Length: 43
Image (tube, rainbow, N blue to C red):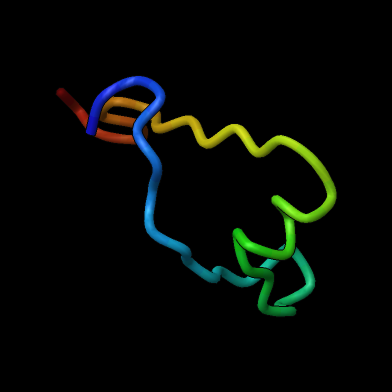
């Protein structure tokens, strides 16, 4: 994946366990997805 590539739709539970889809969030405005490299790992 490269910067500005379109990603596939996905759904994940929020902090209350309610499923939220990326499409629903995009309908409200821009969506930024950030990945932490090696988050919570020893590396």
